[in-house]
Image (tube, rainbow, N blue to C red):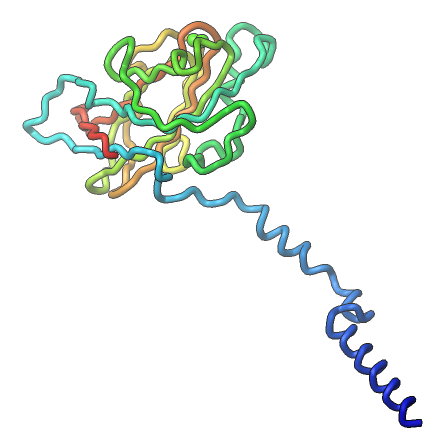
Length: 248
Ligand SMILES: [Ca+2]
Ligand SMILES: [Ca+2]
């Protein structure tokens, strides 16, 4: 009799433990918790980091004063970029010889949120580089970097350290061929009209806001054929150049 009582007690305890562990019928009828967790963790895009990765150089912006010269120098251009690429496509993609639609193809998810921390897809890599302006001051030469390939896109990320909030900066860019520019996650310029040879200052975007501290810039540059490069500089509202001082 005593032995039977012990066995009953063990069985009752085992049943209680099974219930507590969620094996009971009441728990099993509830929606699985993991579904909700998956939805909340994968749906929103991760917020881009507010600081550059360790390998990236930042560029300090010096705002122009009355004494600042209007002549351009290498220091008028952003030359430190964290470049991700190349994303190659076929000469038959996007229809026709102009292939403007490549400019709108998202080779990476959340392009404007790129910050150098996203894993590089197979065949591409992040490279922290200081460009030299081969064909002219300010040129960021992607064709040379990627061995003169054709039909390809790349992203370039820069971190600009601004001494104070600026509400009305101007952006001057040039590109061979197509270009998109985001500043702090906001798309502020697209060029995809037709293939072109580049020069500094082909496009001007006024009324730009920069914030005090680090500003994250993403440039997407698309090459159809031949040369592949871009130029990027900032001025005040009157067009006087900001000076870019490399840090790190
Ligand atoms: Ca090329
Ligand atoms: Ca080209």
